[in-house]
Image 1 (cartoon, rainbow, N blue to C red):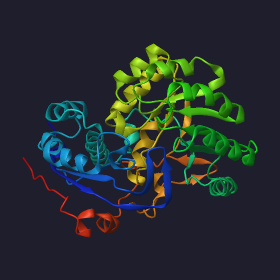
Image 2 (cartoon, rainbow, N blue to C red):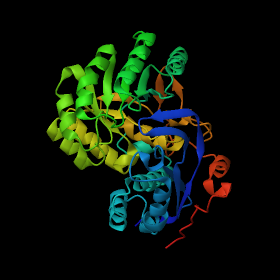
Image 3 (cartoon, rainbow, N blue to C red):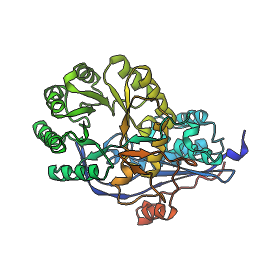
Image 4 (cartoon, one colour):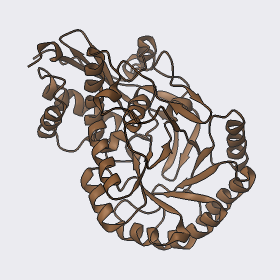
Length: 389
């Protein structure tokens, strides 16, 4: 056992960070993000950071910032304390024994461990994950204000600045006819200068999707994310079988590798939306991506609206994946009023450029970490030092 890589301490805290504008989804409107930041310390003095962010608290899935914090401090932190940080698969097994499910919480701990091990070896995290295959990725932007003129102006401004020419439109909160009219108007305004995708966030049933997807595809949408409920794999398969519906992308339906296998066998989608948190970490993300490659399914680098920490970690693992990607939407840092790193990842010529490390290649600004810490706002103590075991 490498005593220098022994985990000595684990700490978790909840941050509260406002967004620059309301972010409207089918299940609600987000005006604040509350990521959980996990920090680990090793015996050699190295430290690493991880992040788990949810969209709208527990509105997106079963985990909330509070439940993530509780799982880390009560179960997952103790499971890895005293263990060798570099034995990642063994630590994942220990966390699974200590706590079922809680994939977001596990992803934050694993992310911090990988960061600490990479920094101990003065290397970028992508080297531990198999080596990067690209230096940058096309970066999408989400149009989710809910206001047509604002969405169009936002897209045109970002096009002119050469930051984004891929746009995802959040729909599902209004009547389908209104959503389709909204999407069609944006497509006409952009005049083919950008690619468009829509995210229904499970808001439609199968018949609604069958009725309206062809019309949106005809308007210029090429990729449709999670048009029906998570459980409705049969409707996903039916929609994916028809070319007039565009490319169908699974998001909430594909979390674990077992979900990926079920979708591949059913031929229920054309693309997987990969998100490190929902898969339970960087290593499991690669396992889901491997199933996608074997089944000739594309991948898309999704986001839970993380800070630059979680976004950089995601960028590192996405950079190691084979061809077949549809870009990424690691836009969380741009949607938040501030960040927790000293310098954000570079965005230029419509691409997000992968930082080279050490670790995830971003340095945490400890003053900002303290400023956004919920416990410092008088809403409860959430920073826990587990101590060495």
